Image (cartoon, rainbow over the protein chains, first blue to last red):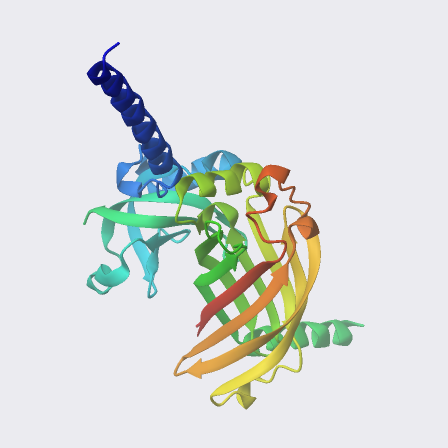
Length: 130
Length: 181
């Protein structure tokens, strides 16, 4: 085996090691998936989602939904849809442009049923249609 | 007999009419369990619900475990699935009382002791801390810190990672209450 062949093999082995280490590092330090990239588990009205969750709340944790409904009230970081779904916006800088009784469609993540307020809670909500 | 019943009803009604509730649905709860020289173990929950009764000083808070946001996705996954068992125990709650609380006394900033029960993974732990209350116009801000240990809530940390996770977990809360009208 001549020297250049040996060095070629050494180079190939080194490259594989470097690539493997890099990709393992990349994988293990990857940030959590963004809502925009996650697939949707439910599409429908806010009322239909609430009924579904009432049947079995445990099934709906961390599920991605696209829901349409009417805004009942607003605060500084989100709003309540159809009286019983609180939606925390991912970007609340646009919140001032919304009004009560407005119909909207949004994509959000179900985090659970809040007993304190008796509301279903969604976070990372992004507006799809208004 | 009838009179006393009426009296009780009246007292109950007047208490509920005059009780002033303050609330937030977007409180921040953070924890840190980092060990020097290792990757930081920390997460933030921006959707903590809390209700404060300004008359009695009673306070209740609730957060969802899966709403803790980590910088690293894999760490978040392990936290939910392996350590916190978020499917089985989706919530953490706190019920307590702000001792000697007097809402009208808070002009700018005032501290009060807070005592209560924190429930995580179905396990209860008594918490004693000091809350810093700040009046900001219509809002009432509450800041507090306390420490807990994984074993308080029966959280088992495998030996292989135990060096990377601190034995004491520091929790910081920052809630901005608004009056319920």
